[in-house]
Figure 1 (cartoon, rainbow, N blue to C red):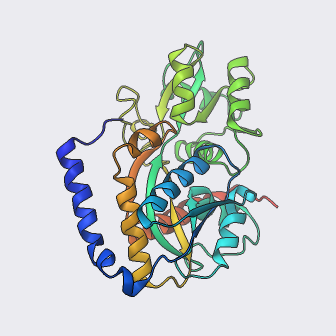
Figure 2: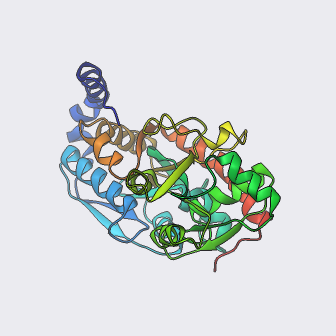
Length: 328
């Protein structure tokens, strides 16, 4: 991932810092923050979500001058953490990690998640985005997505793909492909994408969707072959790899990660936290650290995050219901 040049970065940091001056100057009046913050993440320690949370928690801690404690609340595709967050006090001292699974997919997939993604939370910022890549065995007969889809049309249901589980983003990447391309594919859920990739290489599956940072090294080692990315346009890490949309118009999967707070967060505190997260996202090594997790910096204001959540609920909700997918 390319970093912005020095002068541009300097201007961005300077602009964000200038936007924070009224808060810095009025610190004695606002007295915020005057105690530690909690940062709730709905995943177990380790993995990209936890890594992103801890990266931004450390940034906020340095910028705010207060401890930011990460609280892991794993379970139910990260919806348990969001459910707990939604019932906490909206005083600026508790924020939470939000992402495609918990706010765009989970509310349609899980029964009684305990929150409304548009009403129970205050959007604070989008931090980053990610795409998946479609991979086949290195010796696969399919050299392109068109080849794979032709085989799927010739033998409906014969092609199987693996995922990290029902409702995971790599599962729904496949279901969206089937819906948009008008083909029948067979989904095989696993307890983690790594197990699915192992079975792909062993010949038990025909393809998988995986994250670029884990699939890329396997492709470079000649163990799998990448056919396409799930973004609407080509990814900058893979300029020679076509997007699925080049073959299947209107296809796009691009996941996101961000920060939310309980509903009712005062606008002044929302703005403060948004500006602090923007400053953290613009820090010199943030892009490299996110790239190592397969993520791209994509900072977004609260209204942008709210728009993305609403749009994705409209996309994934009908698809999940049409497939009769539910997880207890």
